[in-house]
Structures are given as structure tokens and as C-alpha cells.
Length: 121
Image (cartoon, rainbow, N blue to C red; front, side, top):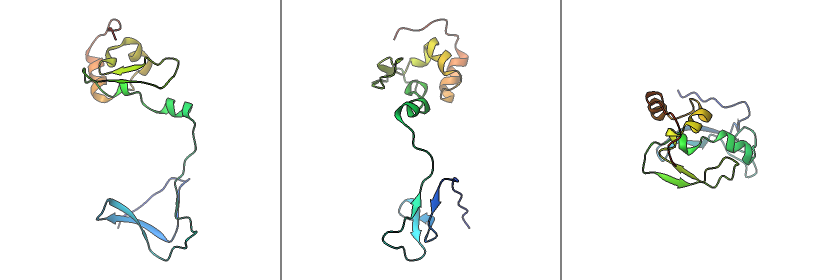
């Protein structure tokens, strides 16, 4: 038997249950008639603004070490470099700012490499 748990802020009607689906992994299935105006599910959590989201979203530069990769950044934060690259993990100022908050492979590279100063961007 499958066991389902939900965050305290989440809610699911007693008229439906999640279970395995042959269409897409897990589905929500009615176990009794659902009224047209009945709320079936509420996902919990709290609403956050863009500023909070920016603090919670990991920077792309902490996720990839593909040297040829780059993308334009339009986050418009005061410290924005306007471009994110696959060699950003080499920048000592980012290493200091992110601490150990890098993808595991990049953290291994950082720990194995002694970076004296920033590499050219």
C-alpha cells in the first residue's frame, strides 16, 4: 500500500486520492463524486516576491563547469555580471560569496584547485 504525506499547509479533498497512473507516473483519481464547485487540492506554502525568489534561486554559475557555455543574465541585481559562464567557478570572489554552495562536481574542482585571483571574464 502506498503511503502519502503532505505538508501541513497542503490539503486534498477526501473525494480523491493520488495513485500510480499508466499515463504519467502518479495521478489524482476521484474515489467518489466531485461537485463542480468543490476544491480538490490546495498546495501549501507561502507567496514570495521576486526579491526573495532571487535569494532562493541558485545562481547558474554554481551549477555548470562547461567551459564553452555562457548565457546572458538579466536579473538586474546590483552585483549582476550580465553574463554567466562555465568558468565562473574559477572566480575567487564567487568562491568566497558562494562558499560551499556549488554543485558537487564544481565544489570538488574548487577544493582541488588553488585559485589565487580572479580569472579574466
